[in-house]
Amino acid sequence: MSPPNQEEKITADTFLRGLWEENPVFVMLLGMCPVLAVTNSAINALAMGLATTFVLLCSSSLVSLFRKLIPKQVRIATYIVIIATFVTIVDYSIQAISLDLYNALGAFIQLIVVNCIILGRAEAYASKQRLSATIVNGLGMGVGFTIALLCLGSVREILGAGSLFGFPLFAENFQPWVVMILPPGGFFVLGGWLLLFNWYRQYRERKLMEQQGASARGS
Amino acid sequence: MNQTTTPQTQGLVAATPSFAMLRTLGLVAGLSGFLVVLAYQITLPLIEENKRIAIERALFKVIPGAVSRRNFLVTAQGIVPAIDSTGEGTLIYAGYDEQGRLGGVALEAAAQGYQDVIRLLYSFDPACQCIRGIQVLKMAETPGIGDKISKDPVFQENFVELDARLKTDGSALANEIIMVKHATKTEPWQIDAISGATISSRAVARMLNDSAQRMVPKIMADLDRLQDAGGEKQ
Image 1 (cartoon, one colour):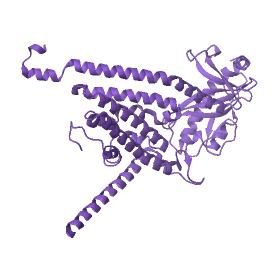
Image 2 (cartoon, each protein chain N blue to C red):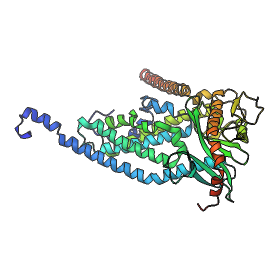
Image 3 (cartoon, each protein chain N blue to C red):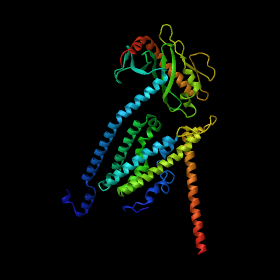
Image 4 (spheres, helix red, strand yellow):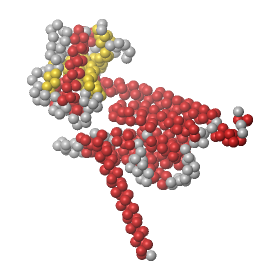
């Protein structure tokens, strides 16, 4: 982590942090409301992820551009106005692209305004960093969020509806596990993924410790 | 005011100039207003087109053979052509085939389902006085259970020719449209329920009955007006 008020250099880590180390869903557990609500199919998850990424990128860029102009007393109001603008644009765009998708995502498009990943990025990163670093970091966070949503959405769709992106995967006699596309399924699948990620993280740490221990004894 | 303040408060005032706040908020609000209006203007024709396509897709699915449509309003004085979306009355859509013959009338019906209100479009065929197809427009029924009302082929068969004949005096349906338990349908005005989704099935039967009892007498009374409109140039 970079100390506050210090501009960081763009490295691969600026982008990759959002994918793995600080993944908004699996590590920071932010924005759980859309994560659980709209991941009942892979296509909804992808659309939600892309919409959030767009809002995240645009709002972070604007905040970063204006960062020296925004007095700190009105910064939250300014961020929210900026975020709400881009959410409205996304809202209109999705209606123009597909009404079916718009109906499937429902109120959760408008609720991107209060998604804490976006406000969190604006407050913790974009307001302190240069435009280029903000774009790279925001893109990483957005891609990380989209991947996480897809992880949930595809598992839930495969188990709960027997299809992926609407294409049936199994033969006629497949009995879908309906609870997986209902709200409880969201919690089950999220729990499963968190378990997997944390197990892998601990496994890696243990490996690292053993290696260090071995090299310490060897020397 | 700034000139007369002591150095101590000067620091505070300099940190919070109202002008900077007004300038920033004004600038951001102006920019966001511009962007929102721009997005609205660009997407409006596309969104209207999408809505029209969605209605027509549902319409041509429930009225077999229909290629064009006309909107009508059912008012207290009878059926009048709908000029635009304003005006009192219930909007109905008449579908015509290539020769301009009336193929059926599509109506919207709604009733409380298991989770939320179910809205659907159904078509009434004046030739056989029957309901000839339903298309769910909006529902929040349980996936895999209640949402079968839109997909289940056996349930859809109810609406191939669902009897909605009028009494001889034309005031109401001769037989109420009712739901019966799964696989106990004996009369053409009964709807065979989906087993396990009784509430959703009953909602469909109730909304069709309510709507047909109200609308079918009016449609049959003004049928000439609907039929004649098919010959006119759109």
